[in-house]
Every structure is written in C-alpha cells, then in structure tokens.
Picture: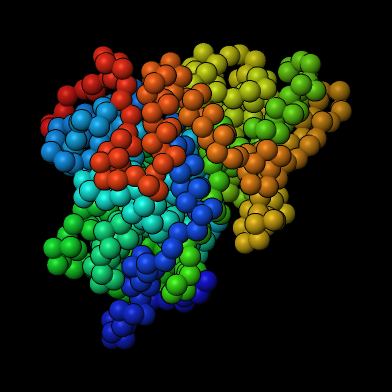
Length: 499
C-alpha cells in the first residue's frame, strides 16, 4: 500500500492532476490487476448478503416507493429491479436507486468502521445495474466490486466525515464511480472526472441520522449510487468536474471537513497490487447498527442471569466514543428513549437494543422492533435505566489499525438494587472474523434462507443461490439472472407520485 498525503492547495499552486487524490483513485480503478481468490469468494458472500436483506425489506414503504419510481423509467435491455424478475428492465440509475434502497432499508448488510463509517455493500447495486445494462460479465462485476470496496474502505480509513456532520455516503459516491470505471474499462482521465463529480454531488449533512430518523437513511446511499452512475455518464461524454475536488481552496476538504490546514494520509494499492480491502469488512448477524452487534451477543450471554428485571437499579455500558455519542446517551437525543420512535431510530439506540436483547435472548429483524415490543412496560422501565459512558480503552481499540486489536464492543455492568453486580465484556461480535463463530459461505446462505422464508418460492431461493455462487463465470445473459422475482401478486406497488 502507498500512503498519499492530501492537503489543501491555493489555486495559484495549479496542483497537477497526477498529484490529486481523485487521480490516484482513478489510477487504482484503471489498474487491471487480478482478483485474489479469497476476495472473489467474499464478493459472492456479499452479493448473497445484499439480496437477503433487500428481499426481507421488499414490501416496506420506502422500498416500495423507490421501486415505483424506478418502474416509471423502463428501458429495454436495462437493469433489473429486485422483486420483479429478469424480464422487467429499467434505466440503470433507477435500478440502483430501487435496489440500493432495498438493501439499505433494514440496516442489515456489511460494514466497515475506522476514521469514519460505511456500508461498502452499497457499492453493489449501482455497479451491478450498470453491468446488466452494458452487457458485462460476472467476472467484470467481480473486478469492479473489488475496486468499489477498495476505494471506500481506504477513504474511510483516512478521512473523517462525521466529525464535521457530513454523511458517510460522501465516500460512496467516489467509490461507486471508481468501481463503474473498472467495470467499463474506462481510461484514468474519465474515471478521474467521474470521481470528482460524484464527490461534489454526494456531500450532505448527518441530520438524516439524528433526531427523528426518517426513511431517508435508506435512500441516502442509493441516491449516492444513482448520482455516481450519472457522473460516469457525463464523464464518458467528455464533460469535466469541479477540480481539484479534494485539495482545492474551495473544495470539500477546505470548507466541509478539516479546512485549509487539513492533512490526510490516504492508503491506496500500489500499481499492480491486488485490491483486498473487502477482507477488512464485516457483515451483520443482527439487524441493528454494527456497534451493537457484539453488545447484542453479550446481552444474550448476560440476560439469563437476571431473574426479575425490576430488581435492576441501572445498566452501564462502557464503550467507544462512537457508540456513546452516536447511538448512546452521549448523543443527548431523547428520541433514543421514545417507545413510539420509528424503527430507524430504535436501531440507532443502543439503550433500546440492549434492553430487548437482555430480556429476549434473541434478535429478530421484525419482531424486535415491533411497536408492541418497543412499548412493553417492563422493557420501557429497563430501557430508561440504561446509559453509556465512553471508555478511552474501547475508543483506542475502535480506532486501531491492527485487525487483531480493533474492536467495536464494550463492557456491560448490571447493577442490582441489592448492591450486587453482573459484569462482562465482548470485543467483537460472534460473526466477526475474530469472533467465536466467524461467518463462512454457509452462514450467508442461512441468512438468505431465513430472511426470504415466506416471501420467495422455494424454487426461486435455490435458483438465486445457484446463480450468485456462479457469479465469476456468468455471461452477460446469466448476469440478468442475478435478481429475484416475488410470487405473482405479492409485490407492493407503492403510492402514486409525479413519475
């Protein structure tokens, strides 16, 4: 890996393109390196993972709305839409919009956390949609996804967005544009322009993840993917973009991030070096914010030790800065204690999540968020007794670049009214690569079967799993089968709009 210094330059410097981060990203995207076998294998896992969570959410209102918008933009030979089967085709950018929203709705696919946060699986819908529309092969998709993951993960390692209240999809626009550039075999110059345009139009505030969290949390990454496709289209037509988008004196860094004195070191593969960043990412066994995964598993282990929840005086969660300030009591967000809050808010409240996990000893992507479950009197009483505190040791582990040290868990202390305590800790979730039961292909397949049970016909489940596992060898015609059809009459249509 090479570390690239990124600083703000005055216009008078006339910073050469080759010295700009966007060019270096584009150079990685245009570097035709082979995909490692383990990377190829993990890409298949994540394609299955994305599909499982998309189908589980297929008839939720935001997904139905996005799908209805996409279906208003039909295109012969275009891209497929989850739920509709391979015969239904729409423009690629609208397929990315519909499918990306479905993938993101339940907050249940893969994650990478470092200087910032991300869901790198959000690269899959736009890249796959463009591949289907442009008649690419499965092998092309694998190479493109290796790029998308590589760029997003390395931007997340180096450049913090959330400290400046910029939403993390600002790293997704450039990564998706770079991945599409790899997919299409575009020249470095074209990818460079597309990356810059994609960043310019995908910066937005984090209010979408604060207060009353709305369905925009699901739409935000699909919007970024849609804009990335449009950016590539413009660049392919010979159009330029704001430049230098990272280093310019009126750039994203200068005015939205660390300012004129900013200094970042962004790691990127050297020329000829394989792209393996997907191996640093991890998926979710439980449908909730990733920082809750280990704490959910820990709660399962601890909950059986409490006989009467009204005997609990308080529950203290010692954890990282991020968990405390974003999904914990450090957020000072009263919505995170509201029993009538939306699902999108509840899955960003570690207090709610731990209360339910302690009591139930299990977690379900629907039942654990059911309004009746959230409003259960004994749960509300326990929920109000839970607070988080930042422990600097956990913060240091969160930010560690050593995979053997990096952790997203914490310590839970249950203090009883009689003065006794029950305390335990867990660093990484069971499903994590260093966890008690690290996930393999069979686990991703089990998750797909579990989440699609009762939604898909058995034959369709087996058909999709077969196609997905043959991704690297799929022809353009075969790639069209990398979608899913719900049984006739079971797909919600969504409300009418302008389109």
